[in-house]
Image (cartoon, rainbow, N blue to C red; front, side):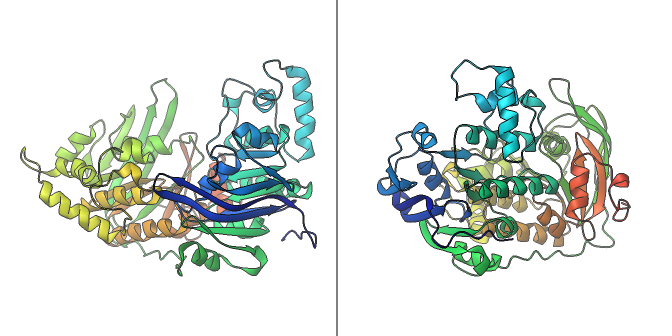
Length: 520
């Protein structure tokens, strides 16, 4: 249900004529952005559209070159985040900023009373405060023991406890299950009813359409339009963000009925360097020409699964069979020397995926060299490949000698994917291939993966968006605390069933469980 504002609503804040440059880059140009009291207002735009810069100006991290900010009708100049917080503005970032050794209550109260905290008194006050907004949290629970959704609740309570009446939420549902998202939306609606104003930043348009009252779209550093959610649909929003019509459907090619087995993992277990078990007797298979999705909460073992199959980290027990060859315990270099054609796209794009200071051509050369024979680098050939990848994937860059650290997130991901596809792999492993990417870049990646599927490539796809997993993948494997809770056919499973398995419920115990079980 769309929230109805008063006939002449008061503004919580307004940003008028905001401009900001970084050197020769114009990040914000004459932006107008207004949010009413008691509304949830979406802020949308592609990567590089200026959203982050605008919100960093609102939160006092940056100062605008031009423009005026008013909060509750009073003009403000924010010299630091403290000024913004003092004006009742709170930012809840996608990556949590909590002190893990402290309790939830101590994290919430920290910054309001200096160094002198009274745990007993503060816990009681925080419980009463959280109940006001319909949030449930144990203030005495250590932060490192909290679930992802509980940590997010602490982050929201932290800014509210400091007096914020304007909240900026950056991708708040990125790592939540469907059940947790529903609970979060109930909380946000209660906050709206109490008069709070919420800026909701998300790439998930279905959530924007379900939750928000109005939306402002940015494109290339400019504010394009503000409109009521009731007067628009998701296709219109994408067109406003991109500047042209974009097909939001994912065409899922059928897997080949005669697809042979590419990857077989049997009873794989491993511990991390501290002795904690990260994977426990994992067993599954993946066929050529098939996309197997992997769903799970953060820390469920997805990262370790990818790195173990790619040979980056050793396993304690079990087998990893690739095209009939046991590659268990072998290093990535040994795997390549065995002739195994496997490509791995990690979640850490600039940490593990690419060398940030190097240009596009040299980053492609790094991987290409592993497959070259002889001691000499074939630089001319690699440059041609780099130019072809830039052209085929429409990578926005001044040229192939441009440092990758200066590219946007979407273009960085295209460089990695283009480099790996260029190697003509039999198995492609992707870890959060579209994390943080805008709608247009995301659908480019989905189409590229489907093209590889048609070429009989086996794809292991680790993702966060359950809607995409259900549309893109053939089967979905769910991990919880390092164990498989179920493997289902994506064509018939539901988000609710996957969400239950993400929370630790085995497939057989899921409501309606067993109905969508995969027999492979």
